[in-house]
Length: 436
Ligand code: AMP
Ligand code: GLY
Image (cartoon, rainbow, N blue to C red; front, side, top):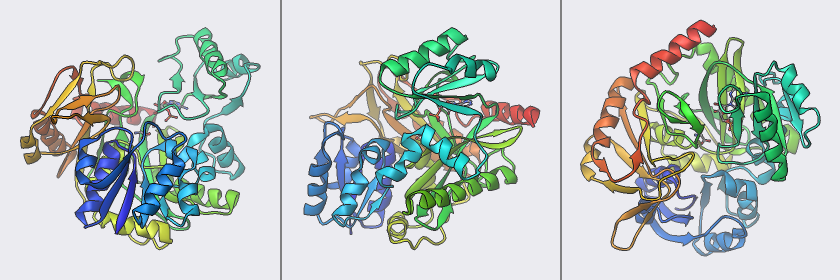
């Protein structure tokens, strides 16, 4: 079978790896010269950007006899790559544009939940002008979050007391978003611990993956600006140390309800990965956001642990025949290697050197890097590579991940070493104990 993989980060590198492991031929749509994807692909099409390149992508897919396309990132989903490929008869893992609104419009998602009595949102209000914003912030007792109502690579959210020091800064940020032509949401700031729960959806059936925790903040101790994600871990019991069984059940149930609500809303089922970003609070599980795709880095943990053949899971998603999906009962820890300053002012001097000896302990997936003539790897302003290890428990997986990292070198690189370490996990467990 021939699969088209759209996207050129570590998430797409592991998708391609898992597909090629079962003998599938990989064709890629790349926006950077990812060495891992170049190596796995029979052929590829290089795009400068996803904008205005749907036609050339569809033509490429048709000329290569693609049996199934898998879309990694949000931009092609937002632009309607799924719609265009499906119109030409190519099945796609990844929702059509209308259904991808679950990610592309935070306002749409909040309203969908309200309309369907899925009561897991914080208090919120949508704005397309500044009128009323200050009053709403006061109503929330200055404990609020401002969100751009569109795609901003995980970087459009600012939280009071963290990124916004006072009301004036909050209003300033709202005005900044309006001046860029955008609308925004203000919502109540939730207190608790975040986790992701992703589900495979085939339009009717929903099959859940283990819970996973990403680390969005750029620096150790969860400080600094929000990023696309610095690393993530899963536990061998498929829950997380600070979650109860009931929390996991609630999150699964919310994903199931949302999948049904989307079908009711549009008359067409959601086919792809539904990613719920949740916060467990003193009042149960609340929704932070939905994504219409695999999380990155979360996909790296989950596709490492997936027991099924990934190509068959994809064919079941597009065919509406999704049955049992199983994951190994092991823990996993993934850490991203990023250019120093990633998230605010990334170094332009960063270099990445990978010694294959890391394979004794870990697997490595390349992200936003470029293979240069001569074989060296240059970095960009985004994440460089993800390294992942598994183990009987989180501690063992984390130790192996750090051993693997010793074989990665270069200049101006940064890793959040605290991800998966006992200190940080205990802090979260204690935080949840005091909140509950
Ligand atoms: P999002 O892009 O919506 O996932 O938001 C990025 C990050 O902002 C989340 O991972 C949270 O850390 C934080 N955040 C978003 N919404 C809220 C909220 N209502 N309360 C507290 N933190 C939030
Ligand atoms: N890791 C967060 C995301 O993929 O949006």
